[in-house]
Structures are given as structure tokens and as C-alpha cells.
Length: 153
Image 1 (cartoon, rainbow, N blue to C red):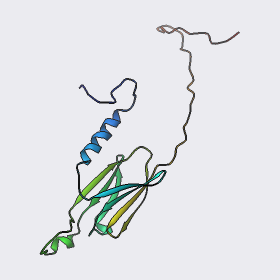
Image 2 (image 1 turned 180 degrees about the vertical axis):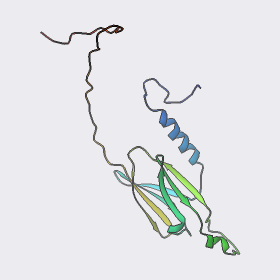
Image 3 (image 1 turned 90 degrees about the horizontal axis):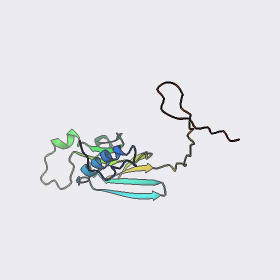
Image 4 (image 1 turned 180 degrees about the horizontal axis):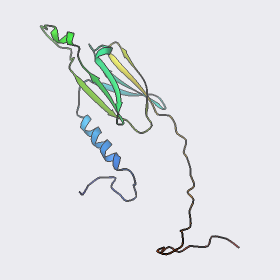
């Protein structure tokens, strides 16, 4: 199978999962309900706010599934039994997914006055430098490698 992908380079090793992440993000971009905001509250903190008027805490769920933050809303059975003369407040079932970068942590969720606030944090990670030891090959039959003497005299 041939792929035409922007990050398809022999120098970008291990980025094949990025294609799946971008594909998921593209699919969820077309969703329009419920409306939401994303704001940066501090240098390492974000807040997603969804307008979920009419939903109670029992009608909502917030989960993390396969590096995605998934918010679901299910109207209660009580709401389906009501007879509306006019229904202008959208309270329909929804699922809104946000693709999370590696290392993002969900610190909490609050439902306040019809707005669901989800706080996220990306802890600052220190850069780790590792030295990889280089070993000499085992000499013997079937070994085509040549050992280089690294001792200095």
C-alpha cells in the first residue's frame, strides 16, 4: 500500500501514529454541536469550555480514550417525555472529541451555569540526554563485521 503523507520520510522514524492522529482530528473538525471555546489560562494550562445548556451532570460524561478527550451528552428520559410547543434550546445527544498531544493531563471538569469547563495541563518535561554505548561485534564464523581497535596508545 502506497501512502502520500507529509511526514513520510525515512528521517522521521516512529511518526506513523501521527497520520492516525491527524485523520481523527480532521474527522471531528466538522462537528458543530455543542459550540466550544479553547483558551490558554496559564503558560502550561488550557481550558475547554462547551456550551451545554439544559444538560445536568448526570446527562454528561467526560472520558479519555486512545489519546482523545471525549465529551458525550445524553438527554435524560424525562426530557423526552415533555411536550414542547416550541423547542429552541438544542438539547440533543452529542459526542465531541478533542485529540490530545502526548503528555497532556486532564486536571478536572466543572459544570457551571450551562457551561462545561474542562481543565488540561501539559507539565514541562525536562530534556533527557542519553548516551548510547557502542559495542564491538562478536567475532566468529558468519560475522562479516570488522572490529576497530578503539584503544589509544
